[in-house]
Length: 196
Image (cartoon, rainbow, N blue to C red; front, side, top):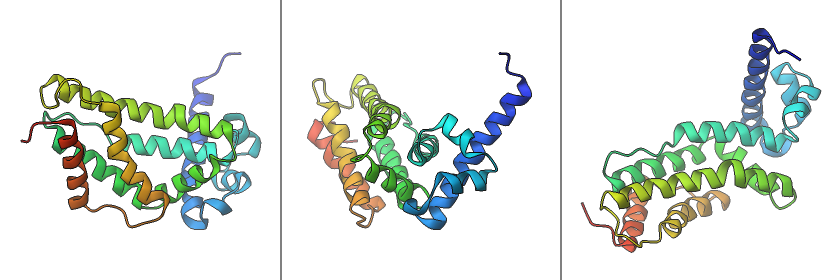
């Protein structure tokens, strides 16, 4: 079957409408009240169309969340690892602190314990790629001599993200800029990174 350019455009516009509708509904109603039926109605697509692309509402919201997170929280390399980590973690904290993204992600995380396929998708499409990107950024700093050889970069990533997830999942107030700076400084000191 040959797919025409116009049908590809329609498919992409339907996909975008579906992702945006899912996030809008999550903001308006809360994750638990969002249904595939409501997403379809808001997006102007059929339920069949949604289920052709995603197995569940969680999968729709995960894709919308992931695309937005990657855009909002890049791993910059200015040559100063402390500054870059503070910028990155601060952006992640802000992203999770605001609707629709924070509530959508909390809802997705709540489903992981009941949906093995979703848990695997979250790991492979979101967590693992972001984790590896963070390790790569630390490795670049290591190559530049900012972090000593032999430092446990994978543990450092867990130390950076752990406090953010802890506050997000337990609905505690998210970190402010000063707390993020303190966290980043602590993690870099634990690696034996040189102070700037």
